[in-house]
Image (cartoon, rainbow, N blue to C red; front, side):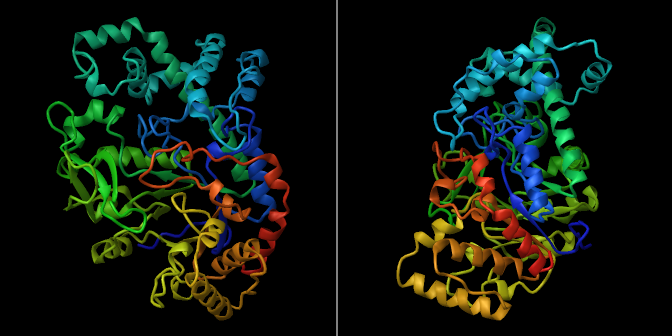
Length: 506
């Protein structure tokens, strides 16, 4: 089955912009005016897709791919000005907080210590007799997450494997007594989800009015310290009896890391999941499409075979490939507008699964220039339309940094190939400045047969290494922190992008 990313045109273009990177006065991007202004900017630039990174709550390392929940929503993104308009906050509740000392960087420490304090003030003013709130609680969608976060607070945010009983085992009368005694605090964490959804749904509806689809991002794995491993460890994961990881997720050495990437997530027990008809995955996918129009599944190759690393290993050099669920899972999920992140170690099994699902895979321009004329990512080798072409992903360095870091003679060889590709595609080869080269590469990508092209915002603006979103296999203050300012959107790039869409029929 072939899956088409449906917009009003069969060829389209979009921008990757994490919510945390949006301009705002809260030290982190929010669902407020900065997000609405970005939708307006996308419309003016002729863009049809806004790709975001996971909206999940972040924890140690600040990665949205390592969250306390697979389906909860990040309270840091809740906009305080919108809460003020709703009568739940006063300006004095948040105006004096020094959210960040650098407008270009998220200070997650400040968010951790101050954001929840402000949201609890809003909760104190919230009318908990409202019919829609009571219906939300009755539905119980985020009840497990709320209990988990309440217990995380009780135990000083230590991992759940270090909690006292009966909390660690997630069962027994003592846990029921805790829920009864801490109902208000548990409801507060449900309130964060209620408010997030209210703000998100309004923003999503605004994007639809502007003919902008939102592409979400689904991490394949959940974190070791998450509500899923705490509550469902016996049913879903390869863990020992104490909840410790028997096997850890990651990938072997590749272009990103010579030691491989040791993510440390628990791996799924696919046999158990198959036995119950993949119920958890069905619910997870249904929920994703309540939030998004399109969903990109991260690390798609693991559905064919996944890399499992022994618990005691400190790198990803040691491990073995084990079988995933394959097409059996996707037949149960039905036809959906899904994009498969098919990067990394790809073999015939992954290629067959991609073909059988019909999902578009990814082509990354920054991976094209290795001297191999048969490289699948060279624009002239993108022969089928059913794919999504990127300049780079959230894990790549920006195009400008890629160019500036290139040494001779690789630089000369790159320029030769770029010129050949431009001539073949009838794209102007303009390389007077590094910014010209960045624009040329984006135009070259737009000229390809790929029916969808996505460009990270830092590449649209021609920013360098300072704007990198993430360096895989590292934990640093530079990851997941870069932010844009309102001035960035006044640089005339929207008009240029609009011209690109017209030139290349996007």
